[in-house]
Image 1: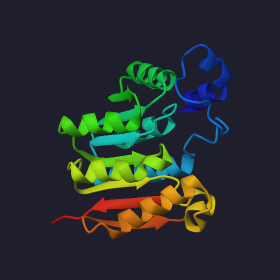
Image 2: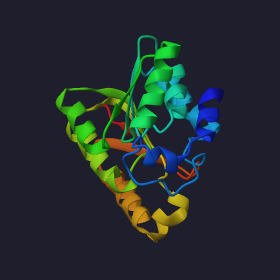
Image 3: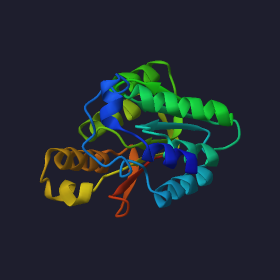
Amino acid sequence: MKDVVEETTTLDFQKLHSEGKMKGPIPGYDKMNMISSTGQVQLLQFFIRKLKSRNILEIGSYMGYGTFGMAEAMAPGGKVTGIDIEPYFCDFVNKTARQRKLNIEVKQGSALPVLESLAKEGNKYDFIYVDCQKSEYCDYFKIIMDNGMLVPDGMIAADNALWSGHSIARSNHSGRCLDDFNSLVAQDTRVTSALLPCYDGLLLIQHRVS
């Protein structure tokens, strides 16, 4: 995945925005900090292999470092479906996936309407990775669980659950949203969860088997 990292280093958000290749506001974070770390991707791969996941959903794909990592670990015949609002990111990941003959499809659009569309189509997943708009995490969880999108024993891994401690202190908007999300998950009897204090907090959520 070295080429994905190299491509990410060349990103010029201002230029892409001026050319109409980025729809949303220019990110306020360093472009390299938006990539999942190697250690985090390896942890996701561990769970995917352990669960023998075939149908994987990624909410927030960016340039695909995590996407390709998960595709490497999925069971034979599997597929990674991604969602990202930015056309440039989607085009890059989809083009690279075609070149590598990997079963990856990143759908362009805002996460909530795309997720709702996937739910209406009856899509089900055994592994879901969430790293997107923090204020929408509660909505993602409700759509996934209320529409049966996570199979029994399936897992959700939600990134940034600690948000540099802001979710515990409720010290900014994203922090309060993430604390609400963490509490919502903890109170939901359909799932069991564990918060790993690594990589800015990784909340693991597993669908209980009835």
